[in-house]
Image 1 (tube, rainbow, N blue to C red):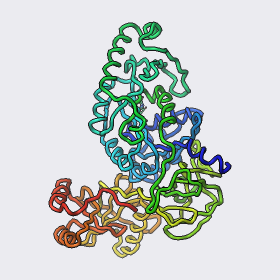
Image 2: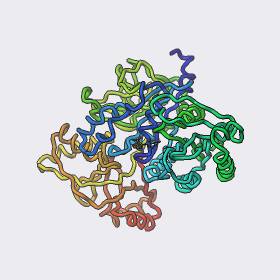
Image 3: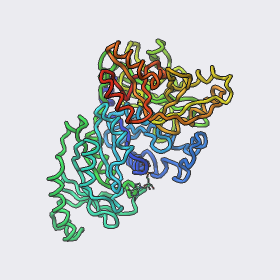
Image 4: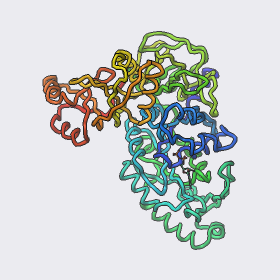
Length: 529
Ligand code: GDP
């Protein structure tokens, strides 16, 4: 790729992630997207079979069983004139802080909602993370081949709970057994659904005009009349699509369909590659880096250990933020102040782990990491800058760690310190006692840490329950007030793995009370690396 091609290559990137509650259909829709991107011959190969997907939370066997899913951390595929990067957001037992951090590395998200269930808790949490950057959101309401809820009610729920305006682009024609297709409100076109095309690229059978003789013939008079009435209602009750509002994260275009039946997905994808933003500019502590700047830069948002039994190493996932990576280039690891040569970055094109020759702004590359790379690390062409906006997220699960062999305290502390720096877990040391408390966003993180402590640091530990419900990073500009707060709340305070003061709240109520009592103190749910 020549330097003159670079801006065009960057502009055609679309880097996104899917946010959804477990079982809404993320995996299924991913398979269909890959099918349209010709990234897999036959849909249905993204994840192991349902039954094998971790009925156990034992990490190692999970890793083995999930084999394929792990190599789908990043999936790159071409579609129309675009190059799409889809970043996996672990969602089941493997839900973790990585899921949140991945959302800091994308330019847009696709929200998948189960049409029968509406807005569910995991989606609420993930949307909160998207809010931090006002990430533009596409919405796909899935499972139209089932008896689902009233669609207008679901849109209202999205608007009320997720605080984002809905602009339906397509609308379903019937549902469940009577699901006939989707109607595009903007082109006045019906796309007819044919069953049994789940694993192939379906034909696109169109009928122009809802109020047309052809529509009446194909769908029947009654259904068309019903739909005409419904569409009028929908137009009145919803917002008209506005691309600026979408790009500002205030409005979401909404599409309907069935991922399993592979219908409505392509209609959504066509708009997605068009409307979703190209790589966005990124802030560093000192300046904003334009995505099309020719000098290479990037940051690490995720570290994955022992990904593949055949490659027993850790991979640091880097989002390229400007310029281009070429095989064998030297880059500055800013935090440690060293230039390092990267000869063997990996990518996951079409589900295979392969070496990249080139990657541009918007792409993700994997760096082999032997312990020198941490979450949030910036890489540049020599410039001393650090990307911001790759925070730690307040954990919601806590456990006290106890050693089986008390003599190994030093190793345990070292291990926990390193694993927390790497981002596998968060460590909290209460100011008033010698406990070691681990915090996590997903329950599997605890298993991973226990396993890695044993394998990599030769310490065996056990977990004990502890009554901490959430954590907040605290700060106060008024030194006197801070001292008073520290004195009075000492029992709830801890120092985290990065040396920051943290408030460990036994209950949500306790947290609210503390916030009320100390209005000068800031309680933050995220902390920058
Ligand atoms: P994930 O947990 O979000 O990745 O969800 P999956 O893609 O694994 O889907 C969860 C379940 O819903 C699976 O049994 C799918 O076959 C099923 N499913 C997904 N999409 C549809 C759909 O459009 N219609 C129906 N009827 N089932 C679906």
